Length: 450
Ligand SMILES: Cc1ncc(COP(=O)(O)O)c(C=O)c1O
Image (cartoon, rainbow, N blue to C red):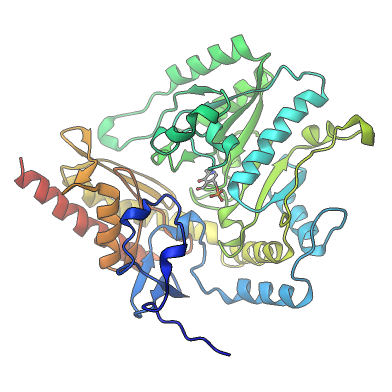
C-alpha cells in the first residue's frame, strides 16, 4: 500500500533535533526536505535551498551525484552489510589500501561510522599504545582551546567548547588545554605564534612523562570559531611531539579531503601524525563512515598473544560498512578524475575575492578564509554580537538565509560559509551575495540604534 505524506500531515513532534531548543521548534513553519538537486535541497513546497554549509561540512559533489549513488546501489544488491568482526569484505580492504597509499606515513585503517567515534578510537589507541609499551602513566591528553572533536565524552574532553559543553563538564576527563593562534584579516597585521609555542614546549618539557598525546584539528579549528592556524604552527607542534615523545593525534574529519585546498591536510602542514582521523567528506557525505589511521609503529604495539590483552578492544556494528566503503571509493575516483583539489584551489581564490566587500561593513570585525572555509565574525564596538531583536544572532541569520533560499548555520557570532567542495563560482557568488545582503541590513540596523 502506498502512503502519500505531505508536509502538513507529517507529525514532526517525535524527532528531537540536535543542538536545538525544542520549545522554539515551530512545527508550523519548519522545512521538510524532500529531495536533493545539484547543490540544493528541495522542500515539500518545491522551494530550493542552496547548500552553504555542505550539509554539516561533509558534502562534496552536491546531493545527487550518480557515480556514488550507483556504486552504493550495486553494493546493496550484492552485500548490504557484513561486519568486520571475524570477517572481512572487498570494499573495506580496497579502501584501506587506498587510504594508506594517500596518507603518507600511515599503514593501518581502523573503521568506525562517524567522526566522534573515530576520535574515541584514536584516544583509546593512544592510551593503550603506552600501556602496551609498559608506560601506562602516560595517559593525559593535551589539546588546543577552542578545538572541537565531536560530542561523545572523550571527544568533549579533548575538544571542549564551553558554549556547547558546560552542562557536561563535571563528567569529562581532565586534560591540559593550551591557547592556539588564528590567522586574522590583513588589518590585524602579521600573526606571531612564537609565544604559543614557547608555552606548549614548557608544558611538554615538564609533563611529557604523563602526556599520552597532543590532540588537535589539522589546519584549522572549525566549530570553535573558524580559527585558521598560521603557517608552520602545526609543523612546530609536530616537531615538539617528536622531541618530547608525545603522540600527535590529528583530526582531519572536517579539514581532510580538500576543505583547505589539500587532500591530506597534515602533509600540506608539514606535520607527521601518529594517528589521524577522517570522516565527513570521505564518502562525499553520502554515507556515515569514518576512519582512524595509524602508523606501523603504533599498530605493532598491539600485537601479542591473545591473553596478553594487547589487542584493541573497540568495535562498532557498522564499522567499515561495505556500502560506505564503495561510496568512499567512488568519491575518491571522482576526486582524481575531475581534479577536485585543483578546482577547490581555484575556487578558493574566487571566494576570497568575493568576501572582500564584507570588510566595508562596520559589524564585520574579521573575515578569515582558506580553501573553501570562511568565517565572518560579527562584533559591535568590538563586542561579539549575541542577539538581534532578542533572537540569538545565529538563529536570525540562519532563518533569514533560508527565506532567501540558502541553507547556512553560524557558529555563535561567526557566519560560517563552508560550501560543498565542488561548488562553482556562480553558486558561491549567490551564497556570498545573500549573506552580504543580510549582514548589510543588520549593519544598518545596528548603526541606526546607536
Ligand atoms: C573537526 C571535527 N571532529 C569531529 C567531529 C565529529 O564528527 P561527527 O559529527 O561525525 O561525530 C566534527 C564534526 O563536526 C568535526 O568538525
